[in-house]
Structures are given as C-alpha cells and as structure tokens.
View 1 (cartoon, rainbow, N blue to C red):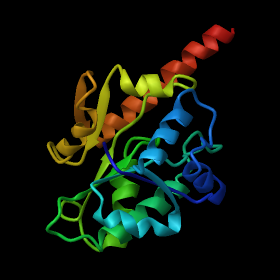
View 2 (view 1 turned 90 degrees about the vertical axis):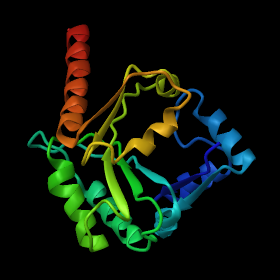
View 3 (view 1 turned 120 degrees about the horizontal axis):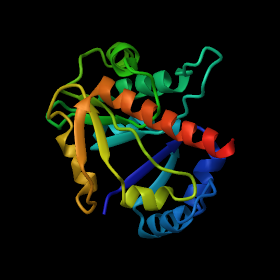
Length: 208
C-alpha cells in the first residue's frame, strides 16, 4: 500500500524499472516490480531528482560500500547520498515529522556518528531531530532468497540516534512477525559486521 519512488544514477536501471523489468537476477523481484508499476505505486527516477524526497515519510539508502585494501570500506557513495539527503531535508517543512533517512549499507562501528551525521550537518545546516532523522537499519538478506527473507526475517535491527526516534519505521513491518531490536548505531553496525563475518566463516569451512 505504500507509494515507492526509486532513485538510481544509472539511466538503464531507471528505464528497466519503469518498464516493469528487474535490473537484477533475484527470484520474485521482477514480479513485485511488475505489480508495483502496474498499480502506479512504483516509479523510478534518476538521482538528480532526489529533491523530491523532501516531502516523503522515509528514504532507504541502499548504495555500495566495497572493501578497501586496508580491510575497511569505501564510503564515497554513502557520503554523497548523505549530502544529497541533507540538501533535501533543508527544504522540508519543520511542521512535518522528521524525514527518516534509513541506511542499509554495511559499515564499520562509528560510521553513522563520525561520517554520516557530519555529512548531513554540512548539507542541511542543522542537527538531526527536526527535519531529518538518520537511521542505521541493516539488512540480512541472502542472494536467491532475498524476498522470502524480507517477509520472514529472523530479526529486525534498528540502530537509532536516541531511543524512540525511529519508532515510525516499525510500521513497515506491521504484517511481519519477528523480534525487533532498537539499539544504538554502533551496536547495530557491529551486529551487521559480526553477521557478515560469521557467514564468511561458515562459507570458508564449507569450501575447505
């Protein structure tokens, strides 16, 4: 029942989604895209139209954070999008609830506090809490079963700046039964890294 606006810097991906085609190979994704486009509830735009988000309820950021040679993550895309959303948030009416800016990308503990929020501050010109609210909401989806995992998660983890600031986000999961953990940014960031590491460990043992 939600209206969804999708933003991507690749015009071929935008055109594919608007044509009802999935830009990735993943079971059931194309069927969901077809349904959304046909119902008029899903529309894709280039990321130059990101100012449209200033009147939305929430934005989910799903950009890449590839590994670097030192074992960390390259955060260029995260910083770029945080800056774009900060500019959009500056246009938001303070009479509206804060725009939930939900980051789903894997990052090291401290990234939200030390990198993401400063990027917002620089662009929006004000602290979070009135026009925008950054959230770290890691995903635990497996390739080839991502849709099924979304609808039947083992847990829902929400990293928040202050307790209770992201309660509206739980509305996305009203029809889904799973334990919900509202925790600090750093705890959520660490949990996602530990989960990734554990799966990597299992894969390494299986390969051996």
